Length: 133
Image (cartoon, rainbow, N blue to C red; front, side):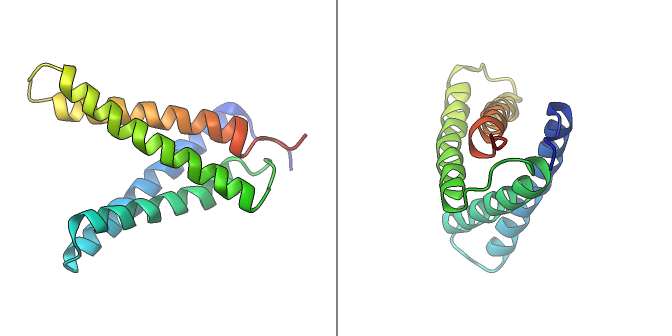
């Protein structure tokens, strides 16, 4: 299968990411509705969104990439673990440095999400799902 171009990959990545965010949020809300402890609900919803992202990005965004099975899945899990902490850390940093404006929580979330998403796209494209040589 020929490699998909950068702009096409980026578009697919954004669409799939939006869908996976809906999966995460939907699972989170559903588990909260069932009375699950809020932190466990968030952990499980993150796993559901991340698993969805792995399978959809592997199939539709980076389809021409190598398929190393467990090694690829491990690389994906490691990347998303690192970017989870980058996301949370960036959010905390932004909340510490932004002046109170009524928008600081939203702005911190956007900066943190944008940072983590950029890292994820670059690393998925160049390492985890890189095109077979």
